[in-house]
Length: 291
Image (cartoon, rainbow, N blue to C red; front, side):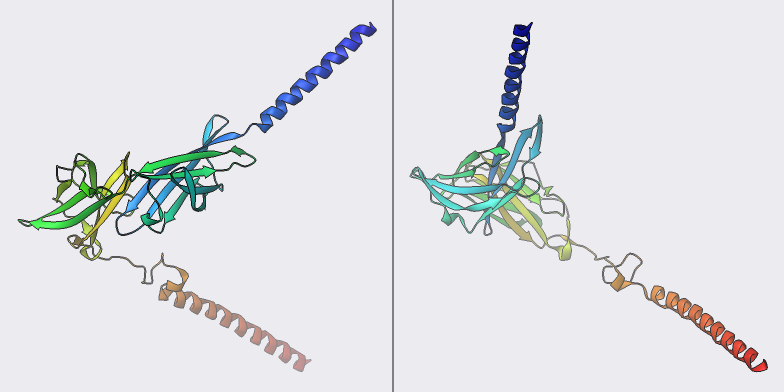
């Protein structure tokens, strides 16, 4: 009987240690961060990387916020730190370069960038590598036979040569999302050029429009964008009541009648109350005199 008790106790002890070990191992296991990065070049403007961090936690993908990332330029197996950035609440970060000249290409004129996360108490370390060449888009507005065209030429800057058979999108900047103009994809010809007619009349503030010519998510060149400012839109009539006194304006723009009449009513009511109080005081004094 005693031997059975000892064996039972030993079994429970071993089971307890096993469960504790498994629990510790599960707690020590960190979730893996997945980094996604996109290289974007806006002609005559900025160059940046769009970075997104996600992780699969409890079989659900979540955005990983507030983690520190380091961006390196890899040149001949040498890591040159470009700077640090942190993801926002959506797990996104925009790392802006002063210009592409801060990066150094390798011997084949390819730029190599690595984005790393060193890990923390909840997530294991991760990295993402990018390789791309430098490309440029020269875009302009032309007019022929009273028809406006967007003309754009795509070039490989490192080779100083045009890029043919590439897909470019032409779109018009709008408040929420760009509006496609012409075919969804326009293939560059042997001179690296596309010509897209603008057949519709688009409204714009003071008749000014901004078109975008975009090489989107190219395996070799990333995303390259050129902007064309064109005063060919239909002028928009400004019907805004922002500076007017309306019912839906802020307090500083309250309609005058809402300021005058309520105040007159308030003053009138207080005037009646004061008049009644004065009369009550007079009646009380008169009563005292009679007594």
